[in-house]
Length: 363
Ligand code: G3I
Image (cartoon, rainbow, N blue to C red; front, side, top):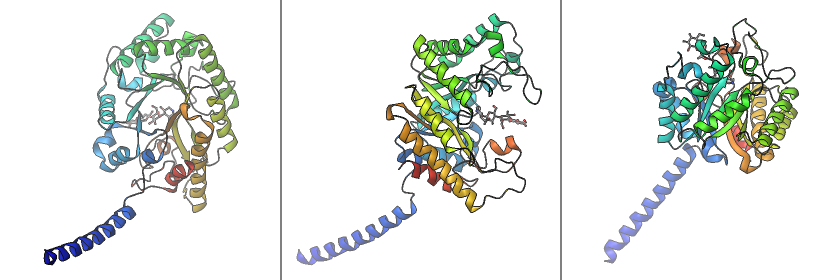
């Protein structure tokens, strides 16, 4: 017995020592945590079906790092209803099915948006009754389709202008393209009615108003707060406010903190809904991301996250969503026609200092 016991015990000790060494190696090579694991509130990315299907690194990054997703393009009216009376949910359903299989939240974006990415047929409508009916039916159809699957919606996106904080009445954009001039046709209070339609379509969905530039345009920020307060007083079903937060390394911290604080003071859920931090706001040709600029981007991410965590009460922390996953698929270079690196992962999906800035902002 002793003869057999001793070598067995020795073997067990050797085996245990080997296992410990192995475990130590694994701990060193496996990242200590992911964004979703580290964060006390949901962390998300805006994503598209094509790279989810065709790029394993993109899909793996989303799977591991996110607890929430937003559709970048697939839930926009131009994608869902390219022609009047035609509804195409293929791309959006793919994203929703992925999220549900991975137990991730889906934030819907967006039901109504004034801009030229609304489908052509919709932009042509000029009669207020016809437009109102069409939007109501669109919201009813889309809200019902995703009922119980989409946790929340940006009901109206970017309704306010950048000057006096008035509801937009633009007919054309800077390039002369026709805009979907919904505010002029339906009147300022159309925003409230869209929320009522969305609530009717899916009473369980959390409903958000979403806009950009709130950290740099005080008139717009104040107008949004005033509208949200008015909705609350009138019983219009609004549950949250989206702060897009397309910022740059030059965006002043004070404006970021003021925007987060003023929105949080409404008592509504607060979603930093489209976060990215541009490093090349001057659109320089031959741009190089120097160590100094990388450090500024790290600091900006850290400031946004730490301010959100400090200023927004836990019960109002709906989460932070990046507008994209990696620098290779970010919308910014295509938009600015310049080089930029605004997201937490580089084009090879390596974690950047920006990623670390998010993590450090949590502490
Ligand atoms: O896919 C077509 C391509 O086939 C065509 O050759 C090309 C030519 O213009 O266009 C491509 O589609 C573009 C699409 O992005 C994919 O790159 C559209 O023109 C372009 O308008 C579209 O831009 C999107 C924009 O919303 C308008 O829908 C951006 O990707 C998307 O990231 C952006 O997201 C918005 C949020 O919804 C609201 N807040 C601001 C944010 C950034 O602008």
